[in-house]
Length: 550
Image (tube, rainbow, N blue to C red; front, side):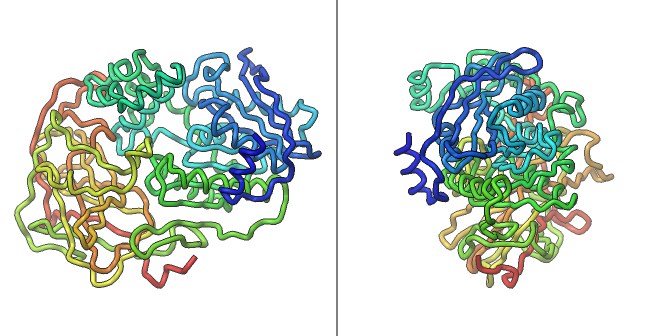
């Protein structure tokens, strides 16, 4: 393992190790308040006075996390890696987010009783390993000196029900991944090699209440619960989100995210709330999906530097508070004082004949599409859990479908840079009261390829949005935040459609309960672009003078 970590440190250009001697104690039983034993590994460097870094995970203590533990320990920290309850030998049943606060605080009590405890600790982890950090952060007190939160957020409810739809691909894929951890390794490799046919069938299956069994062969309790408790304000989520106390967190936090990550909007909400409370977190957002190799490398570098500075008290590398990657031709990395940077809001209006322009259109007839849940508009790229299917892709295959409207600008005479929140407002009529509105912003290059930049979806149902006397509803759609440069000669494109399946569960058009719905109802909807009903996308323009070189 020493040779592996030494080679990894060189290849990844990590800070120099302080020791190569690390003693590892595995399968320690840490008992929590209800008597459950949580299996835990301890990596102890042969240096005195090292503070502790805690990693709690449902994904096992071997493989990449074992390498991570050793790399951190070689830099002088005690590292404690613990399997969440119900996973990899830990007792109890895994119920996402339910026990993480109590189990985490009980583990902290156990740490305090160890002879090597110094009175200070940090936490490190990505995705669910970040949720468990936020679960305890407000109650950990001054002993918590540093947090490394990677592609994660303090609250997951709004990511699960983005736009009040249901993030089917993310939730069901995660359920399948967790269940796959319980099957033999060879069987799992064979399923992956075959393209996960059971998961593919499950994503297309109705009713959704049966999809977990189709994908995994068993009923997954949390999947069933998330299908039931989707109403905004549901009591179910009250103890499963931790954002209400984020302003009580005193520890310095570094946040690492990706423009194509499933949790980015929630992560940037966390950043904004910490800033509003007077905190000074560091934020790094790159051109990454949830599992990009570049994300893992950046989070390791950022995390080690953060732990060195705020936990070990070593000199800071003196980096800017915010570092973002600007996508598109001529973009690249930029250092900023804060996020979002100063920007001017500008509306680009949907026009007749599929045009897009920053001036309101002349009156013209509405554009009509028919959405059929029996042949749902497919999702293509974008923020997905599985990195191989996520990210920016050429959208021409989906744009050629008759159920997708596109609005395209002329070639840009000069660059258009955007940074911050992107929003749209789509004025429409629909023969159905239940429908979804999906909006995507794309960059069309000189070869005609249409690359997705950011997007968002909103579920429309009776009473949610006001319908005027002519039956028109103005639907506000919040797209993923972005930092992007549209190059001269490129064109802006806006897609409008009725869904993005299976990323979001298709809207069946009937209003039946999410899990039980089976009736499919197709319907027409019209997108308007006329006086009194102007549909548009609003961009945060970041003038080229605001693009300092990194």
